[in-house]
Length: 200
Image (cartoon, rainbow, N blue to C red; front, side, top):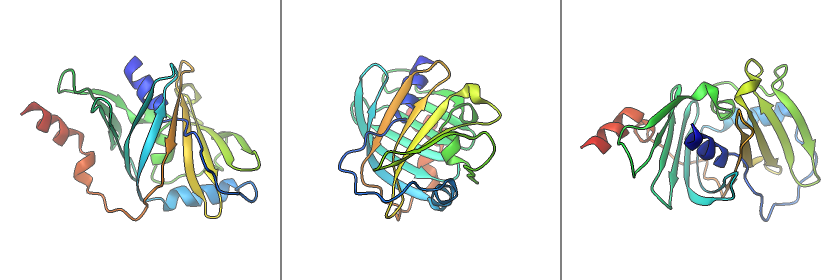
């Protein structure tokens, strides 16, 4: 469980660098529309774990329910597909550690339909003069942790997120430039295919 805490936490808080000038706080309705329109994305990322460990890699996202984190340092691979998250450790068993996606705050941005105006989902919505921050949780299971999303405007862009898990560990993920026009095959998110490939 510790491994997923550090990994998912590392997906969490994107440190913003060289942010463009922003206008006003972005509404929850506009942010929901932006996330629902975000069908595919690819970007480099920097992950900062709760213990200060810094890792880099490539992120690929295909909504709903699919995300892939490829880490540069040790070739760790994290796949979310359907309702599961799988962590492949290149130094260990080819069979991954697997967890329900619904028990991680990451689910909140991978859902088919995102509505940040839903009752008790957003517990914080602020603007610091540069970026809009939204602190969200599963309204039915707040014990699963939170995700803080950071957006800039003109146009609206997701810049980072911070995941705090069920024991309070935080992970920050800083996104590089996102390519939202990329075409991504479903097969690169397939957990069963990855298991089979690694077992050969």
